[in-house]
Image 1 (spheres, helix red, strand yellow):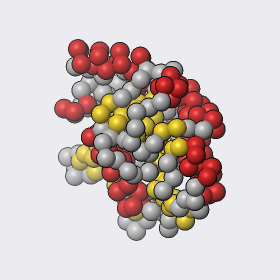
Image 2 (tube, helix red, strand yellow; image 1 turned 60 degrees about the horizontal axis):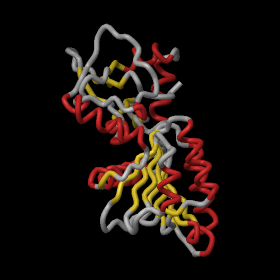
Image 3 (cartoon, one colour; image 1 turned 180 degrees about the vertical axis):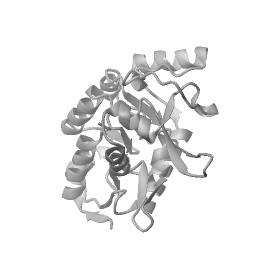
Image 4 (cartoon, one colour; image 1 turned 120 degrees about the vertical axis):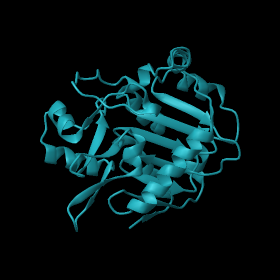
Length: 257
């Protein structure tokens, strides 16, 4: 069940959300004027090579904000016209709130919000995640950093994604790989092979995939299903000749171990 947040809790939960993000961080706010604490947390996630997406929509970025973003290689910024939503999410949790990423608002305004997790609020979490991805998709890229710009240029020229921001780990060699039209040459392997590459058991990996929100575990029939979040990071559902369902995952799925 969702947790209600007042002003104090909203600021606290937001900091914890950023701090605990391991795979992806999405920050959606009409206004973007970050306080020093939020900047520090984002810089730390950037050092850990977390995929960070920031969407704003009410005014041009101030010069000091642009300069700060220019030094963050794993942050992508986009502008969404007429965007008034305030939503902050990671693979583990989501906050929907009235709070802008604006220092004045965080200090002076009275705010409300709700906190969601995939374990307790699966349907609502997935809906919020899909809407966040839609906003990113319709936004105009406003990334400031030069590394990301060069990566986009390389992708445009070569038709392949060679961005430094997504080359988190070298891809392990695999005899059999799977590709999809939308994901080019990204290698994919079944869950049991990914478990071997991560040097953990199959059951441990299933537990981690559920914990990260990539899979949903149905206790009634002991089965797993792919979530919208899992699909967004490249997970796929397949069936073998015996009509048994299994999952494919990108071999560069980061930091599960």
